[in-house]
Image (cartoon, rainbow, N blue to C red):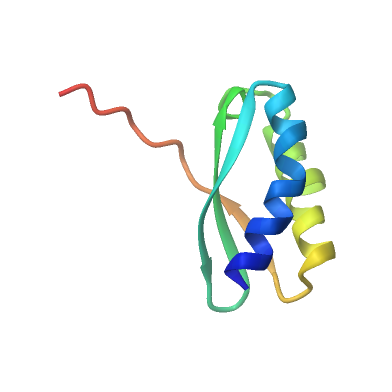
Length: 81
């Protein structure tokens, strides 16, 4: 299922990148839970919830019915050491 989810994300990615954002697939877990991490402009956009639910999650679920939920993880902290 990982390859299917990655392919679905690749379809969405250009639209996110047009607005300065991106998405990283972190994991696909048992029970159909997909974990992603929004990046770039997506991390500070006031529409992050709508983007996640109506663009990313909807697209993934339409292509892969086994997916039950898409969860956005917190952005990684930059290591400045």
